[in-house]
Image 1 (cartoon, rainbow, N blue to C red):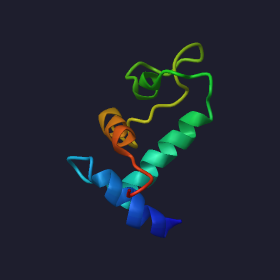
Image 2: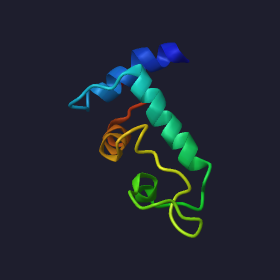
Image 3: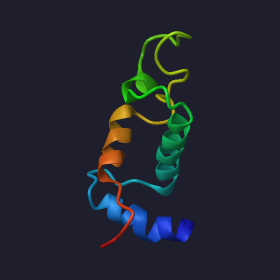
Length: 85
């Protein structure tokens, strides 16, 4: 599967990005998506990049700021392409 990521997903996505995405950045983006999917009750993506202290009663249980900036996450999300056609 990594061959497909390197030869199709990354080039097709980079075609839509001003700053090209690397394989490592793709894996971080994918990990952020998988991680947030583990918490279906938190629908607001803003909570994952909040600067508020973590609370048991509201928001996300973790922050993703140290892994990827919210702006970059949203850029990749908008640009990701799984086909080169």
